[in-house]
Length: 455
Image 1 (cartoon, rainbow, N blue to C red):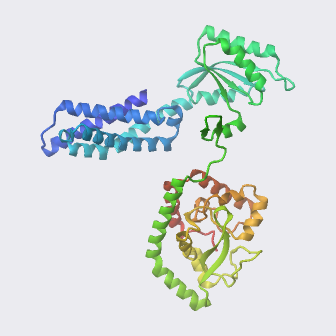
Image 2: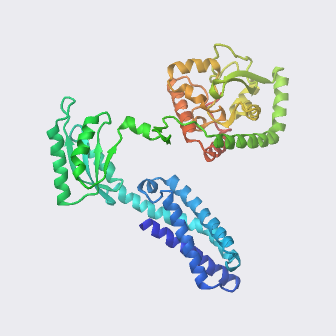
Image 3: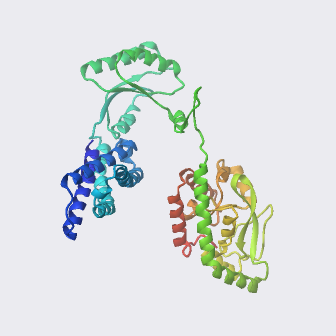
């Protein structure tokens, strides 16, 4: 409520101040003050309603900076589009000052965002220090005495104060009924002495008898009871639910990209790759001529790689070596590798040898951003020793990727380097967004001339 009130007042003040500044400084007659007040109040209510609907006033929303910024920016857009739509429907657009609205839209977000962040971080500090109590709860847990301190600390950082604890003893894998009754009796006594708002139960979900017994014993308490998922169950419940009308199912593996996201990524690839080819074509023509003069034809090196769902394709690169390996055994380029030509060293160090892969992008075999494709021989080798290696093929391979801009490109002499590359690739697949692709492309451009891991 504190944060929502602040957002309401900030949003309202921005519109009132913009109206005052616009008309005072330009000498335009001030509109009716009550119309301006009604408009600013409406804007404040719309802003707070939108942010609340997106869950940004919850503890999880306050703790997530990225979510907070995204919600505020979309909320500010929503406010002004809603105002324009309401004005159109009520045929009152002529009564509003377009200039003051435009000014408020332009300067409002840069004012609103810092104000919201300052207040949110103040709340986060209180939560982290466990000095802000939003609700109280009684804790049941099954396990070794002492582990409840970690649970209490984590709950405290979410604004939940634990006002009582009952440890249900688990001896030799069995739980005695008296232990459950004693724990519930302690919870009932604590409720009579000072009421709390909920009961939290922490135990393994395979202990069905225990759960049923606790629910039966606590049914006399007029409180909600929450069963927290154990580590294994939490992974399953994290997926989106599917309601069939018969039973509910939880998504334990999501498709890497939805159809809409795939279309958006493809449009980005085609548009950006076309612009790059148009801009870089003269450079590529000069490089092709230089290779032909130094080493002869062919100027392009083709090698079989695995793409989306393991489908094979030929990747294009400018030839930078005296060999064209494409068999069952392929040796990675090493520092001071004698197979690399003089021109090839320049091409590889500047990453210019990778530019023909823009044609792979236009052909739909690759994406601008994604896991880098490896030679088939290396795929076969690493898939046997890295369990999650094959998951990289769930999206199209990329000309650059998250692993590459984080230092995991070039030779992978040690196994841990390839494991880290796979870890970064899987994170990218899970976290994809247009914004992330733009960040990777931009960072790649900055690193092109300073990458010392390629030789």
